[in-house]
Image 1 (cartoon, rainbow, N blue to C red):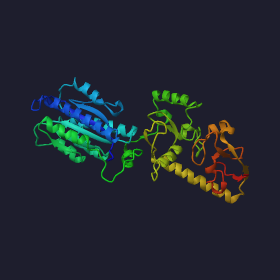
Image 2 (image 1 turned 45 degrees about the vertical axis):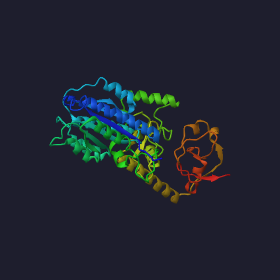
Image 3 (image 1 turned 90 degrees about the horizontal axis):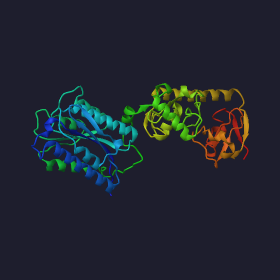
Image 4 (image 1 turned 45 degrees about the horizontal axis):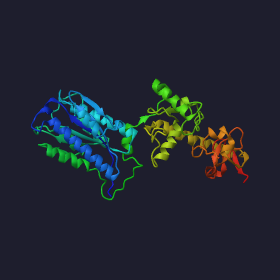
Length: 410
């Protein structure tokens, strides 16, 4: 069975006055509606057969662009059919505005999903009313973001064929149709054209959006001052659901103070702009590196809602500098003085109570299960806790937090 790509498809429909012309039966707009419904039906059936899951959005272009559905609405055949039953022609045709809105919808889908390939299907008679937003510039932006724009031109071919230019810029498909049958053939071909190239294998667990594109559209973590009132309420709700005493505990290391700099969360942490989940910058950076092997630790998906986020490169640099400085200081101290030692033995994490519940391993930053064996640093001023397998990875069994040598008594 061939593998298919799931796509996020924004259908861009021109509903300006000129689309009321009756050179198509019964008119250009109604013929376009039918072609769109055929496309959605064919793609949905094809997805079911081959295990893909495309999503559909709709933008209607008249004197302005109007968003009808985005990917979060989960619109299907019946939703489009209901909307089309009351859609009439009117106004001029602002193609640039429509393309800009379609790109905005697809960018948000990449941020929240990331597994679907973005695509735009533009159906118009090519009559463009110039606005502040130029269609060709929007096509260039779409190309930078890896979005293809397929265009179907109705009516007469004009000297300046804007639809052909838009499709060529983005390596999309273009057709000029003369009747409903030709329109339906084009849309049905598109509907079953999302197969992977021969020899390629589908991996639904990984995003097909290149990291360079993700960097352009990812949202940065927000400080407390930048969070809106609504997000502050959301933070407290998430905190109560987790049962934590404070929403200012990092959702990765489960500590209030940064594990590297020991600074307060208000200085060293930020929140996801989508769900308000709190994270230390340093923890988020390590999380990003674990998610994207070989990456620079600046792009990642939120641990709670999977929203696409980024850490400023300056923060990543500061985190790495702090790590290097700490290593140098520890190395220098070990050379100057004899390393202090403490004896350690394995215990069950559940016997350590809240000490283990609100801690995370300094090696892997993961939390502890009640029934797993752990090693607790014997330094009473430290009390760092390690998974057994992480303890074995420690260089000379030196505690990463306090620098004491942990002597095995087992």
